[in-house]
Amino acid sequence: MERLTLVSMAVLSLGCGQGASQCKANLTGSYPSERFVEATQNERALNARFEALIAAMEDTAADPPVLTTRAALDTLFTSGTPSVSSLTSPAFVPTMNELFDGVVAAQGKTFVASTPPTSGGRGAAKKPFSERGVNLAEYAEKGLFGAMVFKEAVARLPKATTPETIDQLVALYGAPPTFPLDDSTSAEKNVFTAGYAKRRTPPGGTGVYTALRDAFTTARLAVGAPGCDAEREAALETVQREWEKVLVITTIYYLNAAQVKLEDGSADATKKLGALGNLSEAVGFLNGLRFVPAERRTLTDGDLEALLTTLKTPSLATSSLHRYATDVPADTQSLVNAKTMLQARYGFTTDEMAKFVTAF
Image (cartoon, one colour):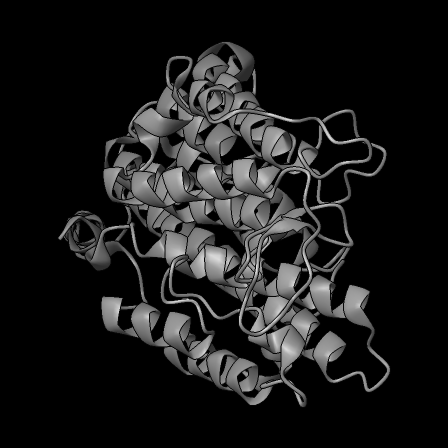
């Protein structure tokens, strides 16, 4: 209902004055950043806690490994204001607990994909895997991009009516206020969702990163400008739509990356584990979206359930992701089916799908 409210308010506002906009402000240019650092202290601290949590999970399989405990992971998850756990959908917390248990159980072991599964452990890419072939750290991170980050963003969007609240959304997204599409030489980097948006947008071209940059800038410039409420509302609607799109097209990218590896006739065990890592990211993104309110996303609960079942991971406990590495030939048709379903739901063109599988 909130999504409809945003649209309705924009339409009603534009309808005043015989359909002519009452906004006379210039809503193009650079994003105003004079108070950005001060306004976003909590969001930037949250990003740091999120990064530390995932790093601790990954480091258990590093070389040399940095062993952890369940208590240590719980502390990283729950510490700080706001903590990662405080903004995570309560319905996703049990999954995080499963992931923490899996990381602790995998320490000191070596993962070898087998059917039936035997035990989890360190994979060839020095990442922790469950016995069912799920890269635990990747699944946690990508799941939280939906169940914590995007879920929190859509809750804040209707209330983003001040410069500070829009700055905070930009920080949650992971972009600096300079919005550098090419941040290779920039002191400020795109991280988290913004980092993925950058990778899906060609240098010097247009795509989800530039769409979000322009929408955030319009919303920020419209705040407080007389008669510009409709423009701000419309820009924030674009933010919601394009933010969701980043998660979905990155899922398509990882599905395709796994397909390429699995269809390589000379693929060894290391390459197949790389495919399992890609698939863990894809199913993590999709599972995370389940915890965003259904009225605020394009994919229905039924869509997400069907996609996760197609990808052999309806849940962590019932996953058979390992079979992509053990079955010969690998079931790459299921990956094609998942990509086709996502294309149909979002109306992506063939040309767009080709661009989504490229890393820029």
